Image (cartoon, rainbow, N blue to C red; front, side, top):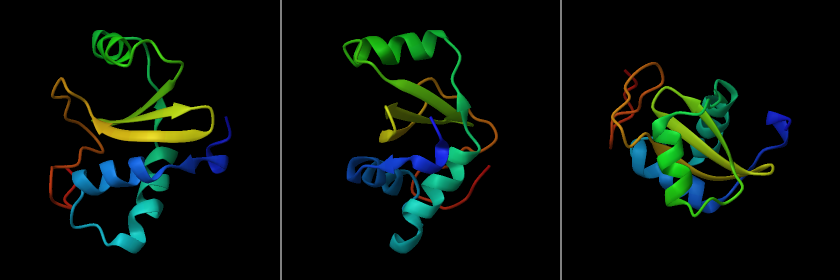
Length: 101
């Protein structure tokens, strides 16, 4: 998939907004694209296996930047979420702030 062809759903924008509440509305899609550009396809791990199982094994591709996981179905970004297992590293977004660790 070409990262430039990414289609971002309203749900993904809403989820990002919840993670970075101080991000101006006009910048949300730009920020998602910037972070996604830095992401890499996520290797199989216990956390990813749990996420796939919770999602009823739906066909999806998972990308990661820091603690952020981007869930894609084809070229459509379905959601942006924080790792449920407490990963903190480059790109981590502290809830309800615009500060990056």
